Image (cartoon, rainbow, N blue to C red):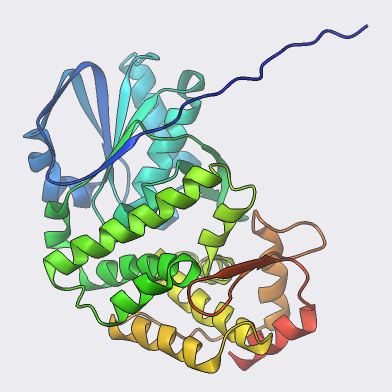
Length: 346
């Protein structure tokens, strides 16, 4: 005997991304702002001048990728339970990608799912991490290996927060912007090559184009069954670098920048990309003081760490490789020795 449960339905996860100064908003429910001490010290007053709620709580967790872990998640969960949050309550992710990922993950599992908003405060999180609903945390095996797809109710990108952004954090965000251009938008990359992203108006246009590019991809492939995986260009190599340096040497965007250089070297070797195109990308990264080299001490160990990547399988490593500038290829059929030759050159 079989019992059939018909669950075929359409779920509308649509939401808006506002690229403008925050608007005054009141929430008639319990709200928790999840942040870290650095962001709170710089910008919490500004956020609180824009937000009121029936009950409003501030939950802080330590700052840094190394704290994107179960302990921090538990800290947030315990506070929500202590304040008796329910399914109508709301979380606000107020910080960079680490805060956004953890807040979204907590929202996805608290009482089987509650709403959250993204208020990203770094360039990287504004153009990438806050958009698309990827949430999660790290563990001893690697980055973002525990998580869920849980879309925010809305994203609010306010340039006010970028005024205090350190130079390295700015560069890390630029790396994610150029990632979108190289994989999906040749004209956008040409625009970036000739742009001065230190100019506020130019930067706003770059943010808009990057967000629109990612939104278009997420619309077609929300849960990364195909096309969306291309947005991991640079990340397959970058995640290994972050893991090997215990998340303490490079910012995420910096590791991705090195990862893009490595992916380009592999693409050149496979004749998918020209030497000139790889050079243009590398020069653009250097323009914003992003690292483009990492010393690989053991190529075999580096290669084996690829298998902890979510896109890879037990036997095959999935690589995201540019087809020139403006197109991309996702492949799991590259000979190991070819990859090792690229790693050995580093």
